[in-house]
Length: 147
Length: 147
Length: 81
Length: 81
Image (cartoon, rainbow over all chains, first blue to last red):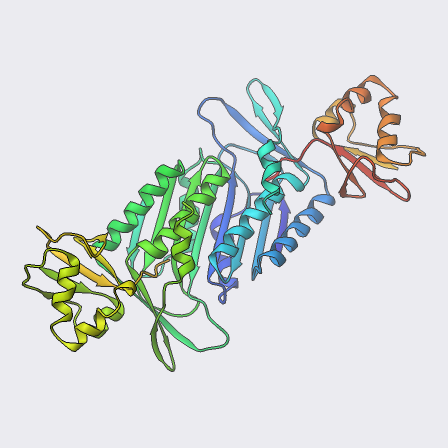
């Protein structure tokens, strides 16, 4: 298991390849990558991600441990960035390895649902018109109920 | 959309990175990679994958088109190998890009479920004791019913 | 008509494909014809529930008509992915 | 006690953290105390449904006791991922 909190960009290709090399006894690998969307209908200049130093790392680790136990993951990876990101940049990624595909998919979806609503990150969108905090969606909170 | 049927290995890292570069207006990217498991309790020498030339490419393309339409995917990638693979080698991968994470996850799971049971591939495991065709599992057929 | 066999169906019948002269109207008729030929065919077609069929490279069922069809393939349930 | 604010709570109150002398027994008591201070606090704490709280870096609810607690943080619902 590896949990990384960093401001710098990460290399999806290198991370995916390294993760896959690690689990040769696992049949299924799933990755999820979150990207700052470049909306055509408004000029997003940047997305700023604030977090709670100390608690963030602990929450990410706890969520990854929980996913590993619940879905019998052979390995799990969570990378999340903070700071100022431009449209098209990758915000975060998770990767899961499991013997069977359903566990790998469920593990990754679980990680995403909990990182979304239970890890202390806050996003703010900067446009030409100003800055606006991204509101949590009710559907994100609802997503937790399925686990 | 890109559909690839090949005997040669593919580079998960390079494919993932190239796929992600393609869809900057998409917020969510999911990949699934299938690996020949290296079971500790028996000596698998190789997995041989037979397929139906002509029909295989058409089935893969049809499944990818269906997934793209159903889950509003901005892009989809399907790579599937055939021939003789050793334990630890990657068999196949899919990638999906969507505006929202649920569509990206569902699109990838849909691709996997249909590639598993509706694309004309047959796997045979070669061990020291001989060769054995991998039997389809009822749960794989059942998985189609959820879509 | 071009008839193809894959996986253990191919192994039981002993050839990957063959040209079959037939007036069978449906896949099921063709199966009956082939199964009547020799033991290896009878064995391969002994349990239709364990078989799948494609007609002109599209999955079909055993009642599919064969009018104008150029290629029929028999194989076990697929195991891709 | 170290009190931290994040996102728009931080913006409304105007500081990211401060040291608070308090004898509040629960988070809710602390909120009442802070909200009574100045308009900017009252504004930040006007709708508790829109707020989340962490006590010593663990998510908690507003009835959580503050005995022995060193750090309390207030923030809006999280938007990670």
